[in-house]
Every structure is written in C-alpha cells, then in structure tokens.
Amino acid sequence: MPTDLDAYFARIGYTGPRDATLATLNGIVAAHAQTIPFENLDVLLGRPISLDPDAVFKKLIHDRRGGYCFEQNGLLLRVFEALGFRATSLSGRVRWQRPRDVTPARTHLFIRAEINGVSWLADVGVGGPSLTSAIRLVEDLPQTTPHDTRRLIREGARLFHQVRFATGGWSDVCEFTLEDMPQIDRELANWFTSAHPQSHFKNRLIAARAAPAGVRLTLMNHEFTTRAPDGTATVHPITSPEALLAILAEHFGLRFPTGTRFGPPGSPWPS
Image (cartoon, rainbow, N blue to C red; front, top):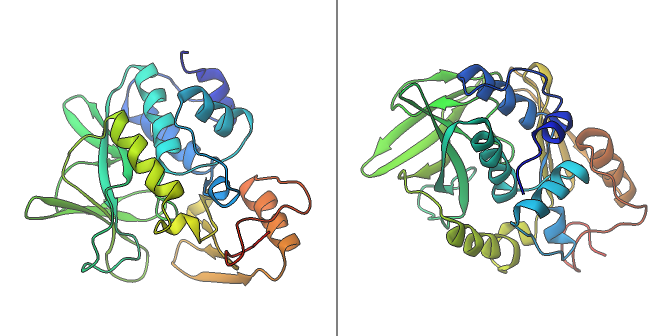
C-alpha cells in the first residue's frame, strides 16, 4: 500500500514542506532521528523482524516503536520515493567501535538521494552516530551536521563514513562501495542481524536517539549515557529491570508492560 505520509509526519512531528528539495530532506532526517529511536528490543524478546512495508509502518508509526537500519532506513527510503526524490539504497559494513582489522558483515542499509545533480547520503539507522542531516557524497570534505562533523575518505575501492565529535579525532561509522542493496540482500542480512548467534544484537540491549540542541542519548546494556554537544558524556548506571523500563519510556518513548524482561539467560536483562 502507498506510504501514509500524513501519519508518518505526525509521528515525527514534521510540519515543513513536502517538495523534493535538500531543505525538505534535511528537515525530515532531523525530525526522524530525534523521534524514532534505534533499538533491537524485539530481537531480545524473540520476535521475528519483518521487513514487509506494512509491518514496518505499523511497528514504527502506529505502535510507536523503533528499529534498526532495515526498518528505519527502509521506511525513510519509501518516504523519499513517495515525495518524488530520486533515492536508492546502499549497502555497507558498520564499523562503529570496531577495529580496522575486523571485517564486519555487509549488513547495513542506508540511502543515497540525488538532488539537482548532487548526491547526498542519509542514514537514520546506525544507532548512536546516526545522521541528523544528509551529507554530500564527496571525499575529504568535513561537513557540519546539527550534532557533529562528518567526512568521507577513500581507501582503495572502499569509502569510509567517519564522525568527529567536538573533542577527539575521526572515528569510522561504516564503510561502503556504492553497491546497492536489493530486497533479497536485505532479507538475508536481516536474518543474520536478528537471528544469527554471532550477531551482537542477540546479546546486547541497545537504544539510541538524537535529542535537540546537539544532545545524543544512548542505552547500552546496563548504562544510559547522555552526550552533550561538547562531547562530554554523563553515564547513568541502570540498576534494576524496573529502572530500565522507566528509562526506555521516558527517554525513548518505548513503553512495555510492567515485568517485561529482555532476552534469554545470559543476556543483559534476562527473563
């Protein structure tokens, strides 16, 4: 069925223009990244992750949940297409907080959009370092976004998307080669991400969201972190399942019944 743009925009609180311009694209990316959280809670609850467009729309929009890249960027890609953008999928490998000598699986989906002959990248599905505006597909150019600075560098055939916060050096976010990600590849990568024992989503509880004024919110296992625009991180230990549910509700808009526990024995918050 066609994407219900009115429901989507109501969910993210976007009231701006709907023409296929850079201002529209950036406004949507910013609103989406600050409203719909990145999260893997259904994986820990043992629920299958469906990439059916109607199922994704129901989960993220009507049920007011979040998701990971195949859900988040899959939805955003359909929104861009409905608005008339020339948008396509790209595939990549997430390198966030991974050393260069480790080769992660190609399990990341993000978006390329063409506007007036210029290529832009959008990615609201990579967790803590998700973009809050689009960046140009151009190498060796630091680009300021509402929350941090980005750049793309080339090493041989590979492009690396990197982030630099107010303090510190450049860190890898993902690598890619401009190869697209057709639906069959998304389905295969989604299975690995949600079901394979080696997927880190099987043994980590993750939620992340950008917040206004350059703030980022991240929940990882037993810690809730607020990162200020200057890079200062305030870490709050989570000491009980009840405290976890309260933080998920207050800071990420994710509400679960009292007594909900995430994951099998050995996971961060076992049932």
